[in-house]
Amino acid sequence: TASACAAFCALNPLALSLSGAVLADAPFTLAVLALLAAAKRLWTRTDSPLWFALGAGAGAAFLLRPVGLALPAALAGALAWEGRRREAALVLGGVVVELGRFAGP
Image 1 (cartoon, rainbow, N blue to C red):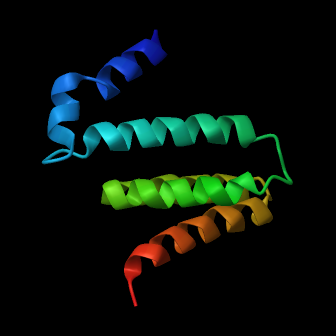
Image 2 (spheres, rainbow, N blue to C red):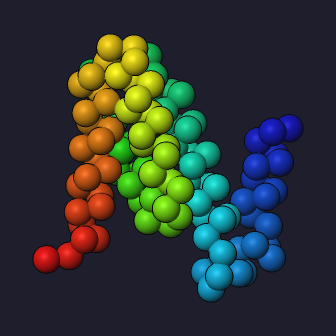
């Protein structure tokens, strides 16, 4: 039921029609839910380069809404807390690369 509720909220026609013009809430929510689902699947893997891609996705979520910076910070903090510094660095590296692409020259 939680997935159905999230899909309903993220795919609400009214929110979708306004999201491109005014609101970034629906795409941001969809991005965060997808990133959290990916993080849950990756959590037991230690050698996956997908942590970098997850960080890049979190950087893209930050570009949708500035509060999105909390997601990679929390992921990297939780990984570092568990002693998984390599994965934490990969997440933060993905964020830096993603934000660097839009920083301009």
